[in-house]
Amino acid sequence: MKTQMTRDYLATARTLSEALPYLQRFNDAVVVVKFGGNAMGDDAEMASFARDMVLLRQVGVNPVVVHGGGPMINEMLAKLGIESSFKNGKRVTDAATVEVVEMVLSGRVNKRIVQAINAEGGKAVGLSGKDANLITCVPADPELGFVGEPSKIDPSVINNLFEDDMIPVIAPLGQGKNGETYNINGDTAAGAIAAALKADRLLLLTNVSGVKNANGDVVTELTTADIDAMTADGTIGGGMIPKTETAVAAVRAGVRACTIVDGRVANAVLLELFTEHGAGSMIRA
Ligand SMILES: Nc1ncnc2c1ncn2[C@@H]1O[C@H](COP(=O)(O)OP(=O)(O)O)[C@@H](O)[C@H]1O
Ligand SMILES: CC(=O)N[C@@H](CCC(=O)OP(=O)(O)O)C(=O)O
Image 1 (cartoon, helix red, strand yellow):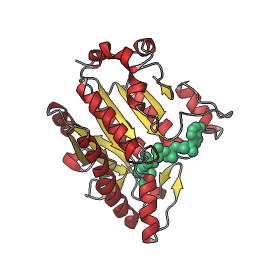
Image 2: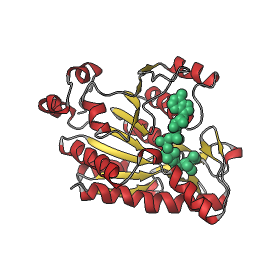
Image 3: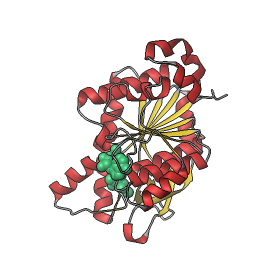
């Protein structure tokens, strides 16, 4: 049974300690957290994120981490002298680039998060969308090369890890039908996994406090119509495009709510889920 999380409940707890007596209400809830490369920060910030994941698991929530690592990919591409560009927030990915993307995401970034969660007392297992056929892809757009759009999700490996009290940490790569490797935007991968799991919440952690309007103010609740209008007039641009696209697709696919929030704030995930401090921008169906 999944616990129903409601904004009403969230609004009644002002602090984490006030929320503590009610945390069992979240037992067995599935929360997919996209941890963006820009949200990762230094070792102390990484440890704070890892602690949040371990605490969620301890109160019975099933967290799934899907990570990005765009800045770390940029750094490695620059070292190798490979030029890179983006179209609507997605990296144009040729054969040489996808090799680097896989090395950086499945290697260094994935293991850094796994190690941080394990150091906090959790049991994290690092995977990519290629493991156990988790994510099958089709090409997203001919102009983007090896950028994948998830066409099939097999979440059985995630459910098995939940049963064994483990926290899946997933790098956003997938496999095509001919065995080719695809680079998937981290937000897109997180949304597809959240939809397949019918997650209670999808949290997209980034380096801004939410979706901003033309005046620069964070919009706390957004409808899909607001997002369409703000994208059409250019208020939403760059890396925010895949996030809002993902939020809309996820809530349409049955995810209860999606929040875009600043992951650099201490205890960002716990505060967002359990207290009215949950700032950021929330999108619901
Ligand atoms: N309307 C908007 N509100 C907030 N951020 C926006 C907006 N439009 C574009 N952005 C940009 O999107 C960025 C977040 O996307 P991105 O850098 O890809 O993050 P991440 O690495 O966390 O996935 C912000 O830092 C900001 O520069
Ligand atoms: C297709 C595409 O854009 N893939 C992304 C995957 C990493 C990612 O999403 O990283 P952030 O979440 O840190 O931006 C990329 O190559 O940068």
